[in-house]
Length: 211
Image (cartoon, rainbow, N blue to C red; front, side, top):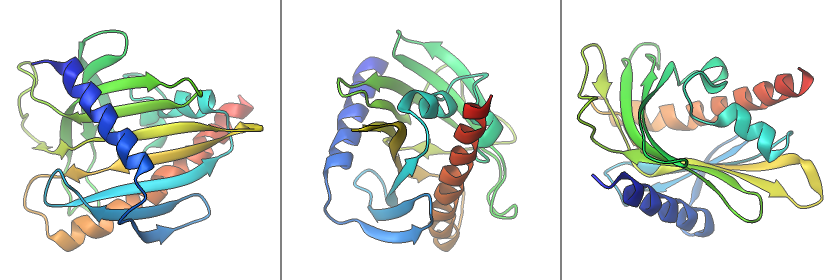
């Protein structure tokens, strides 16, 4: 499987999502983030977009955010229980397994996801994660977890001109949780989990700055 090619395609998709303003409808707004949705072109669900400003430089935000085993993400992100590196493809691309805990008061049981992840930096200082589901021979479905599928998803840490200690963070999620979940549960889960994501990331970056 050409993981690098898949990752590059995902990167192109996410860049298009970030530039395309059409069809988005706001579904939740807090002090930290505005969450929008539109129907996904990848599967029979929704594509969600989060937009918010984080008080921290892109590098600091990325340090808290980056999806790596042993990183800070598992300490603050309630939806990530564990990251495992399955295969390193090159300096920018890897195949990872993410384990998520049960959610929505136990209605959503623990999941795992196997994704190719590309970390890409742009000339303007933007740092991005770009991921989508893949198969990998050393990571078949495992007992105790429902295998979910991430369609093109990721985050953009964008510098704000003239404000080096702030970051504009765009996040994109379109996840097939697998199993047999009522659509209403799925549709209410993602906007709430994304606001929690921004709230907890904001706190993590603040505490990181103070260390």
